[in-house]
Amino acid sequence: MRATGFARAFWTVAPLLVLAGCASGVVSGEPTTQPSSPRPPTSSAAAPTIANPLGVEKLAQDVCSGLTDGQVTPYVGAVRGHQPSKDTKNVPFCGWSPENGRMAVITLYANSQAEGVADLYEQRAGDNFFDRIPLLAGYPAVRVSQLRDGPSRGDCMTIVSVSDRARIQIMAYTIGKDFQYYTSMCTVTDKLAEAAIENLKARG
Image (tube, rainbow, N blue to C red; front, side):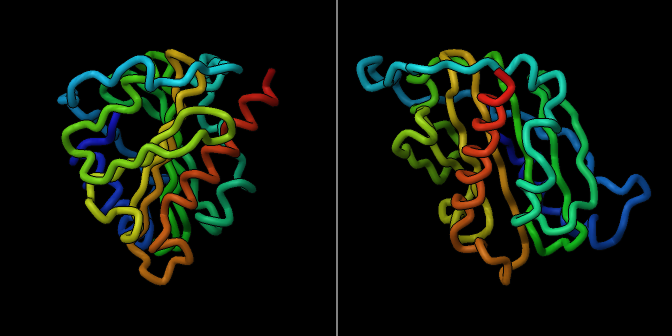
């Protein structure tokens, strides 16, 4: 599952909405998903076996519990609010919005209906940046962005397969060029993905 141009546009204006102020105190919206247009299937031999699979079904019922305010604060600063919702494929997500619109907007997805790891490693249309990375917290992972140089321009999503059918996805975006991680945004998504995985393990 990838975020579409609609989601990109939403998160582009989200910090501006935060600066303007909103009655609810949180930024809301419904990111949509990227229509599949994959490359030829990746050989299953290239997909590692997940030794310690994790479920995300319980997390999906309370997705905002996937990260604590303390875990997002280094990147969001003072948290204006967080709000759960679902995208057009019924995947639960939670978005954390900052008081300071030049900090990062963070979104966590808990996808229990994903395809296998081989599918994770396929680049989609719209993923103009795509990076298959070493195991993250022991699980297969990729980084994507709709911008070719997204991670150096305040935009990254880290997607981790925690079982054959379950994925954790973290998206981070900012307009603040003075944000500490603006030119290395995948640092934020990687760290928060690791935190979300540790939280999953702690759930048992």
